[in-house]
Every structure is written in C-alpha cells, then in structure tokens.
Amino acid sequence: MSIDVIVPMTISVAASAPSRPGFGTPMLAAFHTAWGDRIREYSSPGAMLTDGFTVNSPAHKMATKLFSQDPHPPTFKIGRRALAFSQSLTLTPLNITEGFTYNIDCIDLEGATINVNYTVLNGDAISDIVTALFTDLDPVAATLLSANTETYALVDGMFLNIVIDGILHFVDFTIADFVDIANATAAEVASAIDDDVGDAVAVADTAAVRITSITLGGPRSNITVLSGTANAILGFSTTKVIGAGVEGLVPTDAGTHIAIATLATGVLFDFNFGFMDPANDLDVEDITADPGIATDLAAIEAVDPTGWYGFALDSNSAAEVLAAETWVQAEEKVGSFNNSDSEIVDIATVDDLFSNSQAAAYTHSHLLYSQRVLLSYSGVAILGVMLPTDPGTSTWALKTLVGVTVDPIKDAHEVIVRGKGGNTYSEVAGLNITYEGLSPGGEFLDTVRFLHFLKANLQIDIFAALAANPKIPYTNIGIAIITGVIGARLNANVETETTARGLARKPAPSVQAPREEDVLQADKVARLLQNVTFDGKLAGAIHSVSVTGRLAA
Image 1: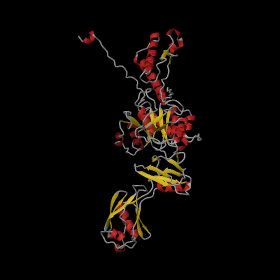
Image 2 (image 1 turned 30 degrees about the horizontal axis):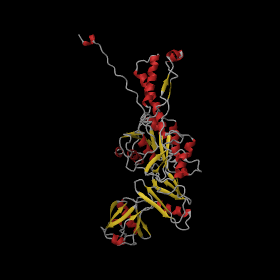
Image 3 (image 1 turned 135 degrees about the vertical axis):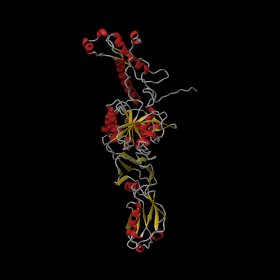
Image 4 (image 1 turned 120 degrees about the vertical axis):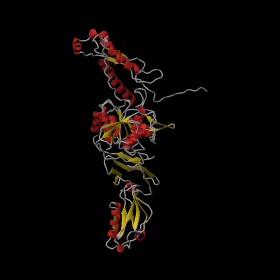
C-alpha cells in the first residue's frame, strides 16, 4: 500500500511577492551609439568600457561622478537618448577693466584641456575681447611649409619620416612619382606625400610644398618632420607644429558675444569658467535646443517602468531640463539637474530656467546652479549621495559631493538662486555643502521621495496581502487585515528620538476603515472596500539654527 493512501499530501508554492520600485537605483539618460537597447544596468563605470563607451563619454563621466560618492548605489542604469542634441552656447564678456584676465578651460571630446585666455588692454571694447577669445577657440589645423621651392633635385630612393597627428608615416620618393625626379615640381612632391600618407595632406603652395594635418585644430593636430634624406632638398623645419583652437567646435565672432556650436550632433564639450563672476565678468548661456527629451524618457520608461527612480541628463540646457521636468512631474520619480546659465543669478531676470521651473511649481525635480563647470554633473552626484539612503531618513541639504568642483558663488547670488527655487554647492566654514534641498515648487526633496516611496509600498503591501490570501473575507477581521497592513507600513516609517524617518512620532499615525456592518451592500457585491483612510504627520529636519545668548557680567 502506498503511503499516499494513508497520508495524501499536496504542497503548493505561493506566488512570488510583487516587485517593488527601485527607489535606490538611478538612471543616467545620455545620448550614445554604444548599443541599441533603450536601457542597460551596470555595477560599475568600468563595466561600461567593455560595452562600447570610453572614459570620455558623457555617460561614463556621469557614472564616474555617481560612483565617486561614498556610499553610492550598488548599480545604476544607462538610458539611451536616441534623439541627438546639438550643443550650443553663448559667452558674453562683460568686464573691460584693464588688466582683468579672462581664463576659460575647454575640455574637448578626447579629454584634452585647451586654455582660452585674454588680458584686457587699455581701450579694449567688448568686441576686442570677443575677437581675442574667439581666436583661441577657433580650430585651425597645423600646417608646415617647405623652406625651399621648386624645382627639387631629388634622387630615386630619397625619403621623409613625417609624424602627422601622432602617426608616423614613411614617404618614399621614386622615379615613378615624377616626370623628371631631378627636377621635381612642388605638385609632384605633394602628390607623392599624399600617396604614402593615404590622405590629402600636401599641396603645392607658391612653388613650395605645404603639409596640413588631418585633424582640424586642437592639440592633436600636429606635424613633425623627424628625418629623411629628402629634407635636405625640401627644407622642412623639424620643429613640431601644433594646431590651434578646439577641434570639433564651431565658434562665431558675433561682435558682442561668442556663439559656440559643435561640428557633430550628440557630443558635449565641457567648460571651466574658473572664478569669473557671472554677473560682472562673463555671461554664460546654454541655448541647446531640446531634441525631444520627453520622447526619449517615455521610451526608456516603457521598457523599464519601475527599475529606477531618480534620473539625470548628460546635456542640461534650460530647454532640455524644462522638458524633462514637465515629463517627470506626471511620474512617481524625480529628476536631478545642474545648469550654468548666468541669468539664474540675475534677480531682474524672470524667464530663466529656475524662475520658469518655480513658476510651474515643479516638485519632482532638483536644480543645482553650477557656476564654475558646465558639465559638473552635480545633479548626478547628489543622486549618488541620496539614493543609497532609505527614503525619509536623510535631507538633500548639507551634503558634500565628491568630485564636484565647489562654486565660488557670492552670498547675494546664493540668495537669488534659492529665491528662484534652486540649490547651490558652496563652501561654508571650510566644508563644501549643498543647500537647501528644495524643489522649484518649494517642497523638500526628501519629503517628495518619501511620499513616492510610501505610496508605492502601501500599494504593493495591500496588493501582496490580497494576492497572498486565498480570499480575504468581507468581515471586520478581513478589514482589519487591510488596516493592519497599512498600519505596519506607517509604523515602520515613524521616527524615534534618535533616528530620522519620514513620519513624525507625535501624533502617531492612525488608520481608519468602516466596520463591516456599515459598508454599503453595493460595495460588498462589488467586493470593494472604500473609505479606508490614515492620518499622520511628516517628520521635519533641522537645516539651520538661530541662537540668542545672554551673558552676565
């Protein structure tokens, strides 16, 4: 006889618990062509390098900023922006004081730093300063002209060793290259050089030979004639020649300002403006148009709706950020952004990014003014600091952002920024801190995140209770199961005397629900429990302290 006859048994496996939103996982939205998916998860910035990114990719720079925080989220996601932006800036000099030095560092697409500087001379007008700065930015390829002119008495087998843009080329001159090698023309020499280099780099120029680098400007544009028997005849200088300006930039001298665009779309140049005052020295505006960030964010969310919470952008122009804020305001997520527009610190300007965000009362975004560095990614860094913390346990104010250059912002400008609903990163008593952790709509971001967390988890808790029980009876005990689930979640988030959480201790949270005998029959038939409510109070936090002392003689 089988034991099943005596002890019949069936063991069932309960359904898995419903998944909860990833309130600790950031998503970094960046344009790239490394892969075609909409979103991928990584456990380190280094893992991105085997996936098609480079250390100079904006997405990798953002991830590095995120992981510079300690602690930082264990994983992050890269969301692919498919619609390419075209970076566009204006730089307007303001200071014509003799002796004042404009000093700007431009970081190109390969990570090289090109310094742009000009010291104001007596009598300089704004247009003179614009022209000087434009000249330093304008990309000019390296070029080298032979000292000797045609005809050249070359001999079969003569050669040149030429380094062009860091690559060594061996140029061999043979009889086949010339009508008469002993009376070689500049055009024939140039053609022979092009053949061996594999690119059009040489031309005849007024009976001499001119070599121009392939790279169009910047420090990687360089030419060096190292050696070769032919150089005694041609007469090239053996001193390294380097290009000027910034490769890939398209600056325009507009008289009153410099307009900066990029040769390619979807690429970002960084700028460090040093200690220049945005109100009195140099006005900076990022006028990059929004290519459709809301479309990209919606597409990313459609693939992964709950696996990430806070997000940041690679390009943070006013147009892009405002579009992203509009999108995220309808979501249970937050966006964290940084912007360097000088008009933010102008109290008379009311249509800048921060003012417009405040006027729209956006509460799902965090805006940091970044005075010194355009691509500071302070918006990413604050996500790195905050997302590892439990919602409701930490404020977004008074945080140090590792790897973010602190701003030399004036006190008056800080007041203006905060008055427009923005936040700053500055030094206070030797400590670099963010302040004050507010959304443009005036809500503290720790409160916004906690409310999103509480709502999502209450919904999941109630759903889990409904799904885990074969059937919850429509009785007072059944109703108590639901109120008990709600009460447990609320109580788990109540602060103690020493531990900060999202809900205050006093008054203690309470949950109310109708008794079974008071429920409408129609609701019972529909199996719908209505009129369940709870009360509680959000916990506060201390951001500043006012002290008055009295001392006796």
